Image 1 (cartoon, rainbow, N blue to C red):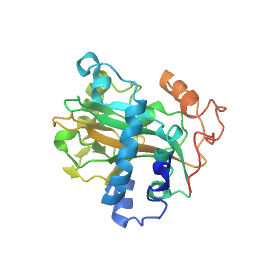
Image 2: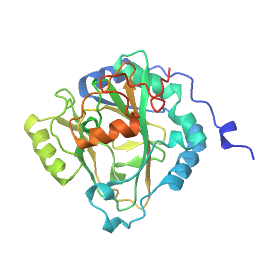
Image 3: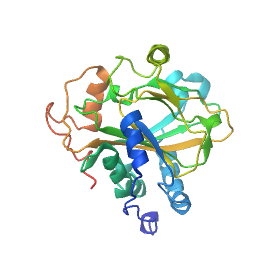
Length: 273
């Protein structure tokens, strides 16, 4: 049987970023880049990623049986490790070079990927900072968030508190109702600009730093919000001592338990450029 891998379009050509995107990312900690993938490329890769996410999804509870975090999205991680076709997407040089250029570094490594599928009727994603979970010694981290279908604000558009990454970790709280309340008060107190796109086409992507505070409303549509994400970390980053149990878990799960203080360079964290 011929694998889909043999006819998937390559994504290793490089895309030159605008000065506006680089400046916005520097100032706000996030930016939206249009047409990272073409319509034809999305058509090729969407069934690959959706199929892999369906095969490896372990959430079997009904929506109403889950807590706030569980209602926010279906979360399927590291598809690149279990699906050869998804790997071609996740390790693509095109997206890796965008991540490197936004951070102003020569090379990046994968931290991990995540399919984040918000079901019809799925709840909001509370305010949080991704890097709360990561035992990493640098602010040079970035998450690419790419919808695989056209989306609008009714489907759960990613929403940012612009400039909020500058102070690093704000609270020692995971994503929860409590984090939503604390971050909401903090965002209002600091008067951060709240920013989100009204619409995104499939293949557009937002990029945000690990400490950028962000959330997403619920999915009030009748369509699955299919989003694929990739988390990149600058090459040369090191593993820090744990600040919470989640970082301990991440150390073993995504960094293969390499020595604290050592480089992030395990086989789970390949260099991409």
